[in-house]
Image (tube, rainbow, N blue to C red):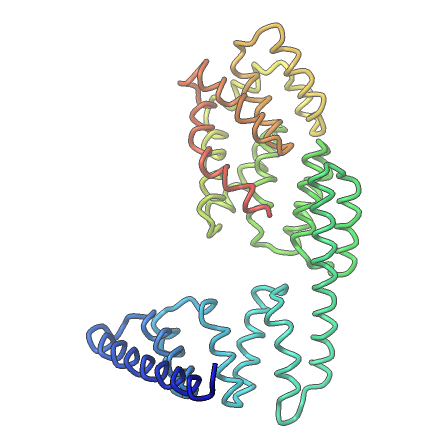
Length: 347
């Protein structure tokens, strides 16, 4: 492209931006509370090099209730252009308070610390070390997840333990270790790591949910209800809350007591480590009588805890077909959609 063509293209783009700015400003006169228009208009002023005007519009969008995560990085960019490094630092530090593994904020802070009038050398150095730690943890996490996919659970646990040595507050590592132990059928260790996760974060409602489910299976009704109540009353995630509410209502029903009285394998479940033995016994019972719907329910529950979701689904469908009026069938129906999202929440 020749120089003349470049200049012509640039002028055409500038005229288009000016036309769009005029359109957006008229739209704001009709609806001064349209948050998205403030963001789009801010982008246009930023493209024209008018950073102060862009900042004004972005800040207005936040005051109107725009999700800050949508606009934070735009504000950091224009604050930096205007030399308002302190304001940019405040935004990134707030991000890291909520998400300590946000790599954009972590990588951006050293640069901003060094641009201050009195450069914060120690803080910049610490953050550079933090970047290295995050990158190492991310690499190790990928390795551990690959081991999980290969069902090499002991190797996965060992890698997650390495992550914890690097960052003892990395909540996800405790979740994944607990999940791996569930898959292995070692529910005692799974429970221990979910409890450690809760000590790190009292608002870890995913761990409360799994502990409630495990307590319910192993007949610790009081403890199960207490943990599920925490999820129901406090969790902001509707899927986790729906599952907890469904299990909680089942625990309150007579069907929970009656089902445990009729379960031929209940003595194994009371020990708390009987997943593998329970699975074997339930399958043995079904070989002689496939119509024992309650056994399909408990077998499906054991599969669910071990992460064998397809097998759990098969057993739950058989249960619903044999005895669709049972409380167990209603429980499965009520949590089915939310349970599908549970695997996503654990990632």
